[in-house]
Image (cartoon, rainbow, N blue to C red):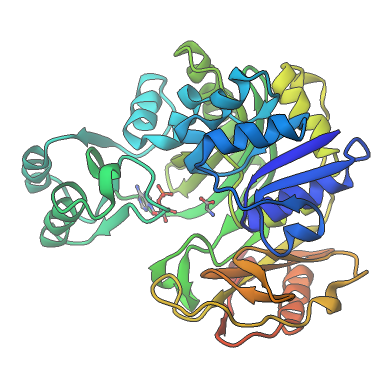
Length: 423
Ligand code: AMP
Ligand code: GLY
């Protein structure tokens, strides 16, 4: 079959790598893709928000399955546009992708269906938000309602900071229309875990757990980024935590969406915080995490196409989702300066070191081909993933492999997976 993947980051390279392993697949296309994906797929320069062009491309190439990996097109309704033309698509429709697209929606859903999360209030009037802050206890968390490249969350330690935050989100519109509404919520403490799951509208099957490192600098300092590295599984995601989440969070979310007439098919990403009072939902995403996908998918034993088709057909209950009994660590190689200003266009070398090495992956995030050379083309450039029998071994392997790659401005965190030693 012919498969089209929409997106062009490390997540899409990890998806493409899994898709390429499926015996069912003869041909992969990717829009727009990147230099790494181009080794597995035919890429074309169409942006994920050019819905008409994507639909026309899928029809022209007679694609059998389209996989939408990114939040913006999902929330914007690309799946609906493709389905309208009779094209088989993996991912939630617009009415379900709102689970990620509106934090106010997801908080109200959790409240209505008693899914454990931080206490909160929604606001669409900045004056009311400011008045609420006067009686709130600090620290407090402010969240722009809509998509904001993972940057629309402000943790404020003082009343002054919080007032500035409301101004920045709702009045100055620093996150654009994402800040037309906002959520103000209780500050929670604890370890964070990401759990991704396949969902077919009724049945949910969770994947192995992972943990992301969102801050730019070692010791969780610096600005928030899209993610600087991940490890899987999380040793903090115990059987007890899993039991709690199965009882109160996972199926409850799928059932709540169905009850609201927003049947969810695709990936639900549960961002969880393991608080002293038990697991709480920090956020939902309607897609694979990036770089979570880069440690979770390489460990998946199933044929990804079979699982995705079961989600579309509503037969996920018949799938036995299995993961390898090992570990994986991903270290992101970024351009120095990310997530602020950074230079692009630096030549990258060393890819040959990954050839024919089992258990080592060089996922491309921000790269492109220029005059026959692979050059940097984004803040997050590559995700270097390695497996190991244990988390410690996977981490040592991943850091070793980061040395195989060279480019000017190469930057990485040196403490990805340090928490493993505390488990
Ligand atoms: P989100 O985009 O909602 O996942 O938020 C980004 C990051 O902000 C999370 O990964 C947490 O580290 C932090 N965060 C979000 N909500 C809270 C909260 N209620 N309490 C403490 N930290 C939070
Ligand atoms: N790594 C977090 C995310 O994909 O949202």
